[in-house]
Image 1 (spheres, rainbow over the protein chains, first blue to last red):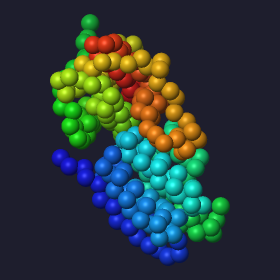
Image 2: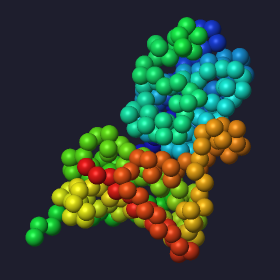
Image 3: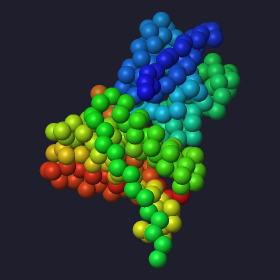
Image 4: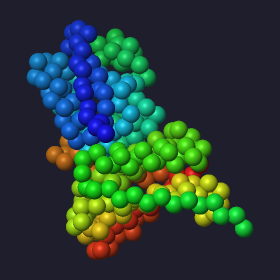
Length: 120
Length: 145
């Protein structure tokens, strides 16, 4: 029974990157996402989409690490969006107030449009 | 008089991802009770939070956490069909009144971003009680079907 997280990074162009997660976002999963995100931020890629289509469960430690990523993205004048959240992850993020500082979308296309500044 | 309550007891060690093992039982019991999928998922999330709170903060000397499930499909307890989950540890206890309410605006700039567990549990479950003493903590969470 291992829920070890995997992260796949895609670069659709510009200063936008998509991080696709697969598995449980706990402390180790969150750290793995952070490692990839901070590498991207270090390269000037500060508009990030976290696609959680293959993540069905998270915990508050993992989400706290996502908040650290959000803080760094905002500090660099970037944007952070999420897509493909399960109803419970979506509800949890809204309970925590994450949706006030990061956008939540059902699918990647409108998220990428917002990250590129093509829509508000 | 009909009696249709079922109890299941589980003990897990304080170890990585044991909380996920416990959520498998929530799925099975919730489905048996014909609870909606989204509600089952909310119970699973709340259980994960209760377990990791116990793992991280209780200081339980035997490195174990007890979980009990009470299925009440006919509303024996308070007239409403519910799945109740209790998470107990033998740790040093805490005063729930001293746990600050986390706020995203504050947490974004704070060095410590954690402390969301109880807020998540209380938001996802329909009824939550925390009983804590220097001999341990028990959190009792109910989700109505």
